[in-house]
Length: 361
Image 1 (cartoon, rainbow, N blue to C red):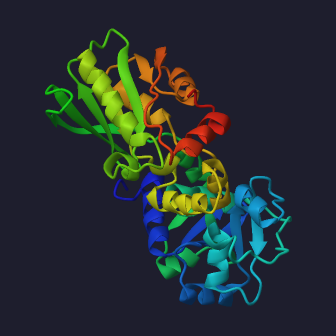
Image 2: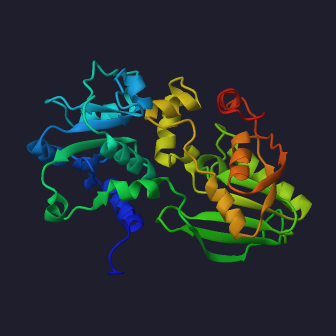
């Protein structure tokens, strides 16, 4: 029936469940597993899982490298939970906040036998829910476990392509918004089908769709854009981009809900805490279990095309944005530098962006 949820809708349910601490069931060719987010798992639910068998903690290879745990599966490690491992132990493995003050005593025993498909899917699901990429999994002998306990069940084979695909964008609403840089401002709201965060396009003036438009792909930065944080250059870049469009008389700024290079605000604050301990931006992301940059710039390209733009003059210092626009069918006729916001508190951050992320500063 059409009333039944699709794979995409079931994934949205699973993300919500995990964020609230409710386990989900993952099913694949090799079997079925109960999966819970390490970040939100309660002591009571952990105890119940132990009654069913011996759980493992799946973490990314990035996090495993920090813990000196062998990642036999390449991109992830499956750490066997010791008998005395409690919620605090799991939290310390998943969250590196206290790594320096309370280093983990290894070695950690990791699995090398068996299929890691469900574990890989679980980590991808945690990332899409903006949770730490660490999941507690337990093999289930009973294929009817989800129905018996009212849990969301995901067919990981069917879900895998959806987790990697770009969710279709739908234009929800738009209205005129007079701005300081231009009274001819219009805000467009786009909502993805997968239930993730909405994204926004700020159109300045009346750009000619037949000509390359001055454009900026700006990832949301609560601390920089709203609070004026001095740890990054996001706020000054946002203001400078809008000012440039206002001065030119037209342009489009895409405000993408990809806080913290796509890891979410909570994880970004965890990364900030690690930076206070002496790690740079990239190192902090790796210790958390993330890649350097988890953003999906295809979102920006899709919105531009939905608005009728096929070519842009892109305001950016990041060559990766240029490459992604070109790869997704949006022609970048010019990269327009945006070098603003340097201050004594973000100099090291900008240096890291240049040396490790290839930004042209």
